[in-house]
Image (cartoon, rainbow, N blue to C red; front, side, top):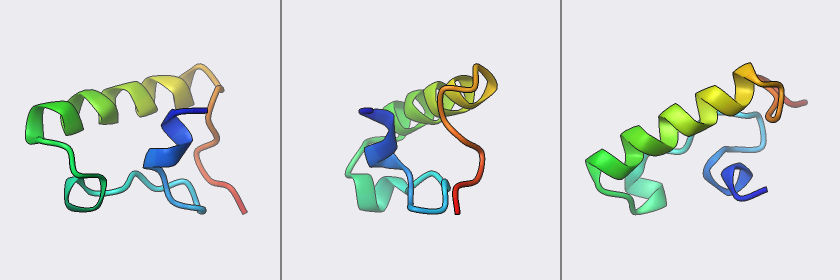
Length: 47
């Protein structure tokens, strides 16, 4: 998935410094990732 490219191997959200997003896009990305976790499309933690 596209959202997995913005998370680490363990499932944490990458910072804007690493992803290269501006602040507003980083907030939008964070909202989308958290929504995908709630809908069980992304895992909260992956081992």
